[in-house]
Length: 258
Image (cartoon, rainbow, N blue to C red; front, side):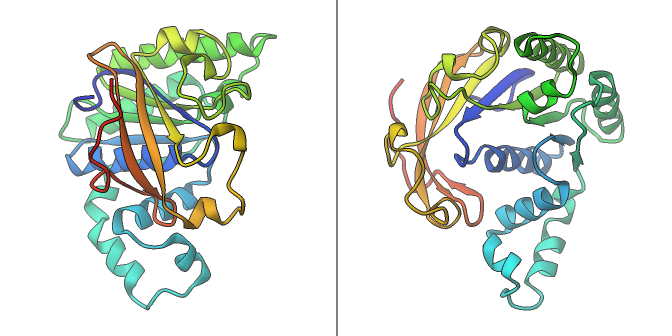
């Protein structure tokens, strides 16, 4: 994609496909380059997000950390190594009733406190935030209103807004625009739309045979850019390691086509 350009970017996928981990990976990449990051989580507690981010960036097994079987000093060393990167990331366990204007004011303050003129804003995820404001009787209108606000935020800040979206049941696990849950405004308002797809099994087969497979076994994931106002669309195969939250694009070099 040539980096996150200023605009509204959507990331969708079925549950367990690694959407939050992918967003955290991009947040860390932006922070390492000196940019401030605002991560608004409407789904996961901030403490858990910090843990996931630390494990991901230090390649620490999250299960081992939770079970308390890591050797003494590993976490302290990892925290010290990531201190500069983490200092640029603001993780907020956001209330679904959070006003759009308040989010913009916070983003502007983070820009002002940094040496950069733009910010990466992450919304995890759209449908929960939209559900917090019941101005309209139909949920699709709430989604449309939020999309308009997020697009205005991106243009006002001249910055990228990465918003995670859920998929509807009919097309869950498919990299198709009509799978976005809520309204067709999602498809038309976004500057880019990407999908994380588990490619080791057909979507119709449901989840893995054992729940632990989702958090322990590495698996192939296809990152599909299906809409891109800034250039071409394409797909890439990567390995996702749920135990650490790492996406390894070094293991698979072959593109899926355009």
